Image (cartoon, rainbow, N blue to C red):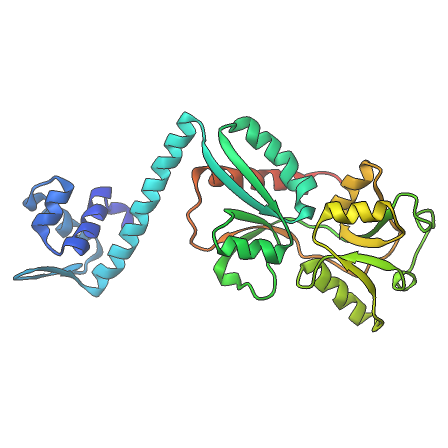
Length: 308
């Protein structure tokens, strides 16, 4: 039934709600009043209910009309953004794209996909902010980033955000490449508790799950912890000490290829939630962000199908 409505009828319903006068609504559409009356009658016939009540001084929407006006405006807005995206694609995307990301999303997700994205859309100015998921989602809520590659955390309601899983991976224990434990065949988690650790700040998903694992293992001793959300600070301290850290497997693999760190053979009883692509619920993305989201989903599908 909704397919019977034309764009001009949607525009008329929106204008009628604003003007509350058929003549002024017709003028706004640049059509005659009889033509506007006919468009309204056709819309009412299509649904079999009155959409506007006629009074001596004008018109007001019925409860059915209020529903129709709300959806008409939403569809007209979508049409406008569709038009903007088509124009942007035709002329070459431009504008700004602000990405918030956790470090673990960079090696497999963001870096390889963004190289291709910038090659296709060189006029889009991209900025990347890196922090823990809880901090990134706060920036998303304030509109300081367009989207986040991270994890929904406690205290941030699911109803406020749209999210789609992109990457599943384990959390691993890492140390400098020449660490005394690096050459051992197997190490128990209990053997590492007394060592110095570098962990993300409280509230970060990695830290929350690490502490939960300690609690489940019955560990109540006070750990020697240095806190930082900086991957650079973490890897620099690991290089010059016997400290340990935990990080997502893809990030550990990246720094392992560079010869900076090594994954220790520890059966770590910690599993991270998947990295999600997160946007604000009911947020209208810019053409640049829309193209990035579509490209990221395609890239994640390629990773998921790749042999391990």
